[in-house]
Image (cartoon, rainbow, N blue to C red; front, top):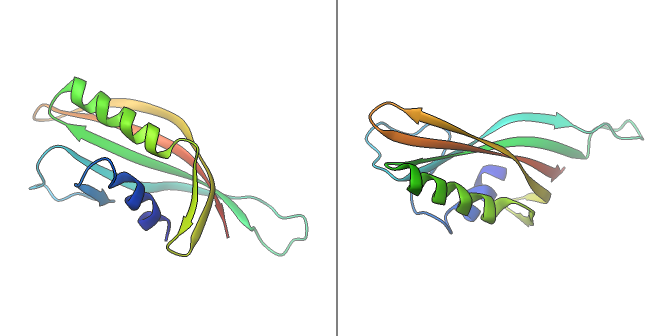
Length: 121
């Protein structure tokens, strides 16, 4: 599954990586990641899509602005232009699509980093 392949890439940056929702008791820093949307590419032979473009969000959380920026930069370095196979999926290309800074409650700094992932079906 794609979650597992992305998880493997993110674990090279930080040990605390979570797919989807993160429990409240998790301490900083950590990374959460999830599928935002999936757009199938129409196939010429009309047998269904063999390539999808998936918008993937990787949210970085830290206790300082400088640290969250550094963490987000590491995520971008690890995933931008990534391609590879594993966990029964093939990513042909992962491209950085933008990022957004969000200040959360309790002095938590959050940067959401988005990627467009081309996934071969």
